[in-house]
Image (cartoon, rainbow, N blue to C red; front, side, top):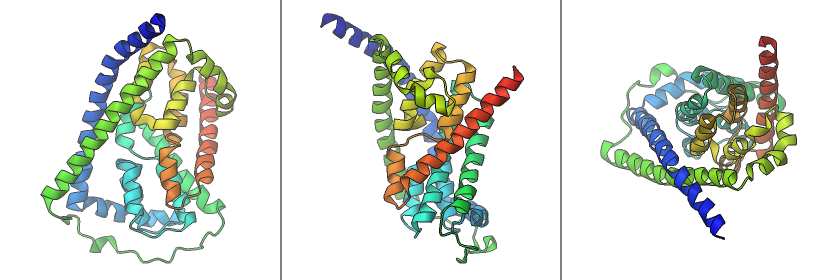
Length: 314
């Protein structure tokens, strides 16, 4: 019992400083990006940007209104996308397509920073997730039943949408944003710290090897190395932002090679947070297994293609 307590205490003592440094790093990035997005929403610029890209959404079989939801999710997070979706009417088919696209590419500024710090180039992460998201939208629109030849909904011409259109009183909107940021920070602090402690406990009690062996068959299909199993689990359960401390610690400890990190980031960039976010989108009408399997198929193809290119360069 004393040995158990000692190892547990050592795990907490070792994990806490690292977790707090990562929390502070993530908080600064999140606060800046979140405030910029708040200003875009307050000034109406986000509406104008959404209107600018809305014609492209015909390729995905989505109405122009869905552009606002996608753009919000792309720059902020899945919750902002869900908030917009709740104000418009989408069919199950449309919600499935939008859900797959948003879950593949959301919170790009923050999550790209995390992936970059683990060793993958920022431009690569943004390119893979953005193009992957668009490819999912086009493919699902072609394959899912019920496709309309041409979407006939009405769109407002971009020329009729002002570039700047204040969306309300600054003070209540600002305090609402600030309260949301504080709640997110509290949740983020608790979760990142707990994950970092859990990671240390798994190493301290030699449990990491067992986890790796358990997921070896599935990861082999995905084209990922056995050593990435714990990070794969973390990314799938809580996502990139909340799992950042664990990912950064693994990278800095040298447990993963740059090759393994790039392969993992290719996979989890498009397919992560497959519990909470997937449930949110499903609650709005999206077909969860189509959203999950379509992203798994895409990332499996991408990872094996990357492995092939790496093989040619050797």
